[in-house]
Length: 220
Image 1 (cartoon, helix red, strand yellow):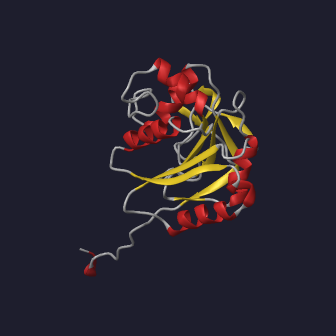
Image 2 (image 1 turned 135 degrees about the horizontal axis):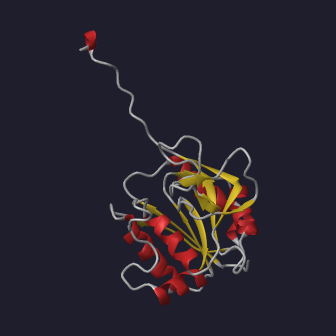
Image 3 (image 1 turned 135 degrees about the vertical axis):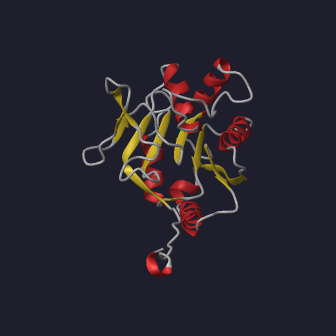
């Protein structure tokens, strides 16, 4: 990867974890990361996350960088984990690369569970990536965009195929389910024959808040 060839954006709302902020600070303090960064910026997001991601892509494509890293504001990662992604990406072989992360309510599995390349059971249900055996780069059907690295050529090819306002990310039903804008992105990418990978050794943290509540006095 060339110097100043990476844009880092994180969609955020009023909720921003301290762990994510520290992750960005630590990354920019690291020389090997810092020399690669062209731009690092937050993007205020409303409830339509797909619109935010598309706006980020438009701004990225207007600039000189070749790689775009989107990191959600509730993720946490180390500089070494980011460098593992940067070292593993490739414009042709690995142009779309996600980190391995937990999703909320899914137990221990990838965020918006990546599917193995072979894909689905006979009934159409997804086959999750086995975290106990996965190692290194793994070709998958889908990967969440919690920490997603994409080469600019991928966005350019999608823009040639799909119409505005959402050539890249869109909330569309897929296999009878609406799994979010990141799955739609991966579906469109793979439909063009572009590979999608997850780095199973880059296991980042997904920071979630929980509410603890006592039962009513007397049990009802």
